[in-house]
Image (cartoon, rainbow, N blue to C red):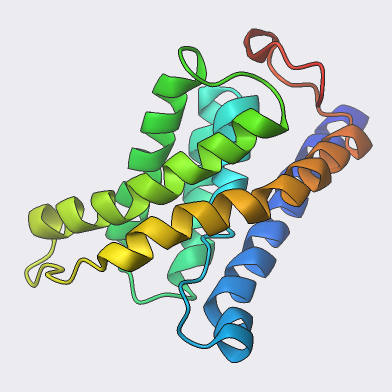
Length: 179
C-alpha cells in the first residue's frame, strides 16, 4: 500500500508541477518579459517522463500534461493530445539511440521537444482542424528551444529530487545513475 501511495504522490506532484510551469509560461512570462518568446516550461515534465519512465507511464503523463496545457492555451484537446504524443514518440525513439542519462541529455531532450512541438502543431492543424494554423513564427521557433533547454537544467535536479523523495526508481533500460 505504501508503494502505491508513493506512486500516486509522484504522479500528483508532477501534474502539479506541470500546472505551475504552464502557468509560468502562459501568464507570468508575458508580464515580466513582454512578447519575447517564452520557453515551453511544461515540456520539461514530458521530456523527463519520456526519458526516465516506461512508455506506459509516459503516455499517461502525456495525457495529464495535455489536460493541463489545454486550460492555459487556445489549443483544442485533440490537438494537445496529438502534439504531446508526437513529441513523446520522437523523444522515445531518440532515447535509446541518441540520448543518454543525465542533465546534459535532459537539456538536449527539452530542446528537441521544443523544436518538434511547433512542427507537430503546424502539421496536425492541417490534418485535424478545419481552419489550419498558417502562421509559422521562425524567430520564435529558433529561440524557444534555446530558452527551454536553459530553463530545464534546474528542473532536472528538481525532478530528480522528487523521484528520490517518492522512492521512484527509473526503468533499468535508462541506465541512469543520476536519478
